[in-house]
Image 1: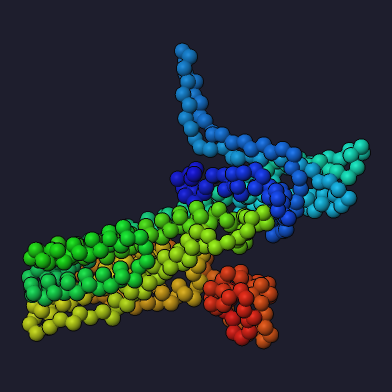
Image 2 (image 1 turned 60 degrees about the horizontal axis):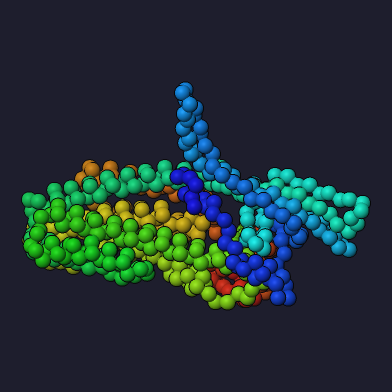
Length: 469
């Protein structure tokens, strides 16, 4: 459940439990029963036995009292979830466990660098340590009692600032693209109104609608989303079939169809993320460094499940934006294979090609600023930006409104991309064979990024030139 309009990615829901059966949650009957543990940022889990847990929350309420005995309550938001744990360590080596816990509690925690509290009956919480106490009694040799107060990790100021910045930049991009849509349609209408070839106009719009259909053919997603995109494209051919050949009407239909593709792949991506997060959260939780920690280990076995199937599907879907982006970026060299004998034919074809390039530029701006910044690097974005500049140069900007709209789109896109912190790709030659884990530690780069940049498996012995960030 999201608890803030600005903190759109913050979820205060409880973690998914390991099992609805308390016996299975504890791992009874297995060789490795599940124990409670606390893991400091960057550290290893330290186990303990808990005696009791208290989880508290509620809502912040603004209460106003009025004369004559009535009042009003306004909900301001959700209170921070607080966990109070009473636990102990016991046994011959309890001193070692007690000392490890104290060391873990002393590691600073905050929303960006939380600790992890793992409880068999509750699941795995991201937490910030508030206070801790260790009590020992002379009569209880071999045992330490521990009291903990923790707050559930929240949505940090850093993330909130980044989110607000992205929202503002995104609003600028959307506003600029909206102006580009209007300007491109008006410029096309002006260009062909007095000198157009009707046959070329109908044939040309048929060809650019086929081009859009080919782009949709490369998209992976639900049938409903695909049908929505194709419905807009078919709207162009339906107008032509009905001999509705007003330049403005056809241009508006084309613009609507092109940007419906952007909307469609966004919806597919969002739906896939929601579905994947539902399944994957059942089996995995993100560690503080982005790696996956098995939530079922060690009490239950890990098998190929719907979560892994969803992960595979999401990888296909994650390519949608890049595939569509590259198709529209190629519009810089787009030429329409139409007969150009008369002045009317030449004028109509030139206007159609420019409309296609102008709209493609707007589509690319929206797609480029919606790519997942965590999965892009400086080098990859530089290449895409160069292609966008090439597309911009190919547009005829003689119309002043088109010129202004294209300029505004480029500036808004640049501001948006500058708000992201892209990693700069580096290269190093590895002379001796290394495993992926050894290489990640040696280069100081996340193993997942090494895999993605070099297309290697975690079972490979890696040697030679390696790209990293």
